[in-house]
Structure formats: C-alpha cells, structure tokens
Image: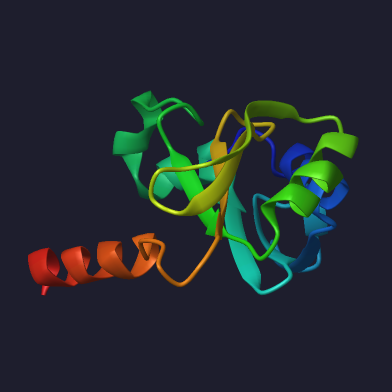
Length: 141
C-alpha cells in the first residue's frame, strides 16, 4: 500500500531499473492506482491507499511502511549495495556478514518500507527462506 503509485514507480525505476509490466487503469502506467513492477526475476505489486482501502476498509487506520520488511535473496550483496548507494537511497544497515552465513544490508524505500538484501555465502549457511516456508506450510496446511 502506497500513497502515490507514480512516485513509487519512479523511485523503483531509478533505484532498481524496474519496469512497469501492468497497471490499472490499463495503459495508465505510473499514473494509475495499481502497478506491477518487474525487477529481474522479481515482481512487486503496489496499490494506492484510497483504492485498496475501498476493498479492505480495515487498512484505513494502518500506516504505510514502518513495520513491514521485505527480504530479497541476491547473488552479490556488495555489488548491489554499491549500485543502490549510487542511487542516493537511505542505507539502514551497511553490508555485513551474519552469524548464520549470509552477507546482508538494508535500505528504506520511498514509502518507509524496509528492504533487506541477503547473499548466502556458502552451502553451509542456514537456508532462511526454505526453513521459513516449511514453518508456514506446517502451520497453515
């Protein structure tokens, strides 16, 4: 959920070279109320607060950003950090190695969402994503 789809699209285009692959109303691109962005193999969907809260009124009182952190596995955290730092974004955590075998860093997007990026350093490192998916399956399936 975002306040301004156009502003968000522009930020993701500038920082990640994102491409708008779908939007609503159709053909409106960044001027619509919903957009799907493609960044390499990842898709992100964003929707303006006003249209989203029409469908889900309980979101009216929720803040944007803040408590949501998105985690993205990457091949080279140091190189990506360098590219992102050149795009003049707020770096929350510089690249560092964790106790569980990953190199990570975190940034803040234009809506206040935390974006974590992690690179698995070797085959002995904990597989965070797979472990999480098995927990979700066990609790919801």
